[in-house]
Amino acid sequence: MTGTAFLFRNRIVPILLFALLALVPAYAAFTDDRFILLFVTRILVLAIAAVSLDFILGIGAMVSFGHAAYLGLGAYAVGILADSDIWAAWISFPVAILISGLFALVTGAISLRTRGVYFIMITLAFGQMAYFTATSLSAYGGDDGLTLWSRSEFFDTGLFSDDTSFYYLVFGVLLAVTLLLKQIAGSRFGRVLKGAKQSEARLHAIGIDPYRYRLAAYVIAGMIAGLAGALMANQSEFVSPAYMSWQRSGEILVMVILGGLGSLHGAILGAVAYLSMEEVLSGYTEHWRLIFGPLLILVVLYGKGGLLGLIKGGDKS
Amino acid sequence: MTAPALQLKNLNKAYGALQVTKDLSLEVFPGEIHAVIGPNGAGKTTLIGQIAGNVQSDSGKVFFAGRDVTALPVARRAQLGLGRSFQITAILPEFSVLENVALGVQAHHGHSFHFFKPAATDESLNSKARAILDTVNLSHRTDARAGNLSHGEKRVLELAIALAGEPKLLLLDEPMAGTGPEETRNLVEVLKSLKASIPMLLVEHDMDAVFQLADRISVLVYGGIVATGTPDEIRNDAKVREAYLGEDETA
Ligand SMILES: Nc1ncnc2c1ncn2[C@@H]1O[C@H](COP(=O)(O)OP(=O)(O)OP(=O)(O)O)[C@@H](O)[C@H]1O
Ligand SMILES: [Mg+2]
Image (cartoon, rainbow over all chains, first blue to last red):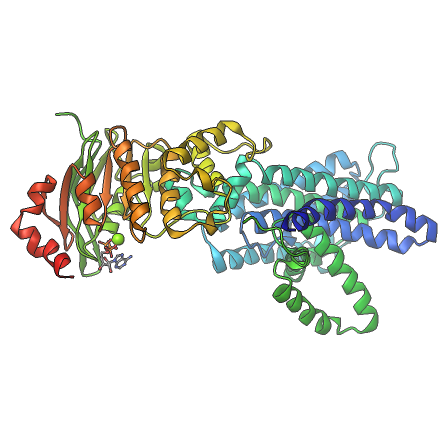
């Protein structure tokens, strides 16, 4: 029986998930519901960030509490370039990814010298640093942020401007990122990350210092979250420091934990569940967090391993 | 005489006022098992840490593979061929037995910045890992989750992981601690078969195993070596009997 649960959790769930997500534009067209299309686009953008966080958290055991900084960096790269009248995505997206990677390299090199709670605190501190830097950018709206008059351009196509094609763009990025990170997780590199999580002393004793591998993973995750940020700027046609707030970092963490750590597609499930619940509950009451908080605790306590963990069995004997 | 595989010169280590290693010198020669015995708290694990690099020596030098490694970090020393097992088992519990050993092989293959090729089906890692599991008689547990092994099996896996790096010297910290008689016998046989190719520094409380395996024995008391000699010499040394073996016999 364990075999089927394992198969279900790791093969059927992700395939089903992506299949359903692929059908959203058709559903939106059928019901003539533009809101659902935009709403799910937003979910998928945040899911990209969540998957990248799961890569370092679930696989590499790096509890980053500053992951929203990369969303902000990517978004501001698009926003600031647009403000200088550079709309081409082939310029702004590579810039967004590169800047995020650089920020991850510098802050990761320092943060990864610490472990545990200190790592959480120092990534939070770097995140807040990015946040306050953004609020001080008075040329770009400071606290209020920056409204984009249009979306990025990809040559003469409607890739960004058309809502449906933009949805598929985001969907495609999420799919590609998930597959890429799954591949990396199964490689020699991924094996080092997973091993270092279990026994740092053992890794050193066989001649592997995990530091460089963790740093590389941290940079990869930062670049992907930066890419998500660039998409987010397009999705909301607006950029503000709130993208980088610690609350946003916390939300992404919750999505990852809610979905179930370490599977990557669990983070997508978590993003869908978290944002849908937020949408539904906040329709009833503005104190929706009072309901959501205990619900989250229940899932984490009883569904050990998050939503994916609710599918029982499948552990190797 | 041939050059020693490992040479320690006047090592010292203190934790506060507690001098744990005192001006300690010893050699391990090729083809030799050099056992270090001594009562609890004598400083055996600390000594292994100083050799492996986990514990920073206050003074003294460690020469390994013909070079001074005193300043090198743990991973660098391991890359040079210093393999070890831990007194407190340090395996990767979520990995299968095969994956544990395959990661050791992988580490020996050079850097691990390979991002795409699946490691789980990499025969260049798995075939060697399987051969090592064969050597230590753990093949029947190849696919088991390492965390689910019995204590004795975990001790054997410790050894297998260390062997995966093709070590030029093994540091073994009580490999037989807590193993059953059958398992101890297996470990003794395996270590015997390996010692011609891999010299070892063996810390062990099981005196039967030590006397079966060791070519030379050093007795460590309060961080200092009180005697070094062949098993027979050590057995008959009055100082040793008083300091260590005597206690053991009345216990
Ligand atoms: N990190 C440390 N800080 C302070 N004291 C320590 C530390 N590590 C070891 N000691 C002390 O140093 C002494 C030697 O410890 P060590 O673990 O090396 O002994 P051992 O010979 O391996 O003992 P055992 O046979 O119980 O394994 C002990 O008194 C121990 O309490
Ligand atoms: Mg000890």
